[in-house]
Length: 447
Ligand SMILES: *Cc1c(COP(=O)(O)O)cnc(C)c1O
Image 1: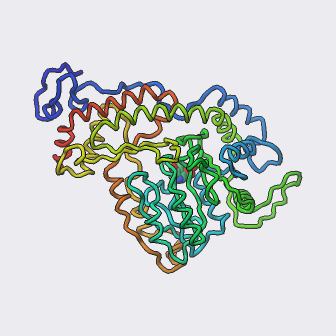
Image 2: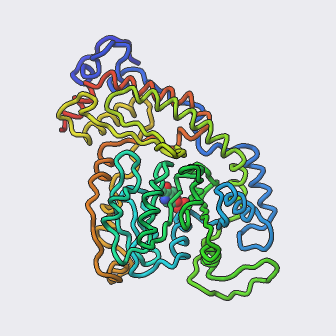
Image 3: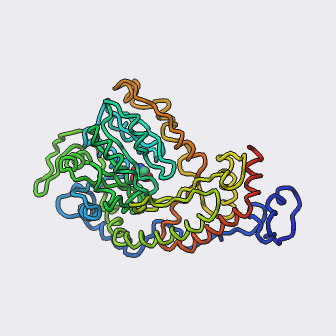
C-alpha cells in the first residue's frame, strides 16, 4: 500500500509527478477503482428470469412446434417492439445474418459490402452463402459504414449493403438507403449491438430489407447463452428464413410435419429455454435502456472535459443503444507532441487497467486484415472468390487508425446499477489524465 513517501527507482519516480497521495496505481499508488464493485455484472439475472426458464422446461422445447411457445411469443413481441411485420428467431446472431442473406437470394458471385470495422461474423456470413464480402471504410466518429466509401466499391456484382450499427450507434441509413435505391441493392442490417436504437424515429429492425440481431449473453437484449432474431416486412423473406432454419421444411399450424425439404436449409432453431429467458429480460429492457442512458451520459460528460479523448455521442436524430463505449485517443490534443497514437493508447491502457478501469481493445484488426480474407480461406478452389472476377479492394485507413488509437469499455456499464462504478471509472480516467507526463514517458519508452 502506498504511504505517499517516495519509493526508490526510476519507475516509481515516473509516477510521482503530481501530489504523492495521487500516485498512479501502476507505480504503487492506491487504485482509483476498488476490486469488488457492485452493479457490474451482465446480464442481470433475476428470480423472474429463473422462474421463466424453469417453466419453459415443462413446455415444448424447440421452435418448430405448432402453436404458441416461448419462441413464437418472443418473435411476436420483438416484431412489435421493432415495428416490423415479421420476426424469425434463430440459434444465434451469425445464423440470423446468414439466413437473412440466404432469404434474399444472395449467393455465388454476388458481392456484399461490409464495413471494415466490425465483429468477424459480419464479414463471414456473406461467405456462408458463397457471396464475396467487399470491405468499405468507416466514418472516423461514428465507426459505421461511410456511404462515400460504399459508393466507391459498388460494382455490377454488388447485391447488398450490410451496415453494422456498431456499438449501438445507428449507421447512416439515409445515405446507405439512397445508394441502395439508386443501384437496386438489398440492405441487410447487422443490429447485433443495437437492440432498441432508433434512427430518425424508426426503431432499428424496421428500416432495411432485413435486420439481424444477436441474443448472445453480452448483448443488450441477452439470452442465457446463444440466440438470434431477424426482422423484416417482406413475407417471402420471412418465410424463406423460417424454412431455412428448419432444414428447408415448411412447418404449418395444424398440419403434421411432412419432412419435405424445399430449399437449402440449416438447423438454426432457437430453443424455448433461450426464448423464455429473453422474454423475461424483455420485460425490463426499456427501463434498463433508460437507466443505462442516464449512467453513460453522466460518465461521458466527465470524460469530455479531458483533452485528447474523443468521447462517443449519439449522432443527432438517433438514439444510441450504448452497447459498447469506444474512446479514440489523440496524443496531440492531449498536449503530447511526437507520441504515436498507438503508443499513447497502449500506455493509457496499462495505466487505466492498473487503476482498475476495465478498458480493453475490441477488434485488433480490421476485417479486411483478418487472415480468412487476406489468405482467402473459403470453401477450397478459391471459393467464394473464384465465383466472380476479383472485386475492388479498398484501403481502409480510417478503420485501421481507429483500431490503433482507441480503447473500449464493454459489458460492465450495461448493468442499470452501474452508475457508481462508472463514477469510479471516470475518476480513474481523471487520475491518469493528471499524470499525462507518465503516459508520455511510458509511450516514449518504446516509441
Ligand atoms: C455479436 C455479434 C454478431 C454475432 O452474433 P452471435 O449471436 O454471437 O452469433 C454479429 N455481428 C455483430 C456486430 C456482433 O456484435
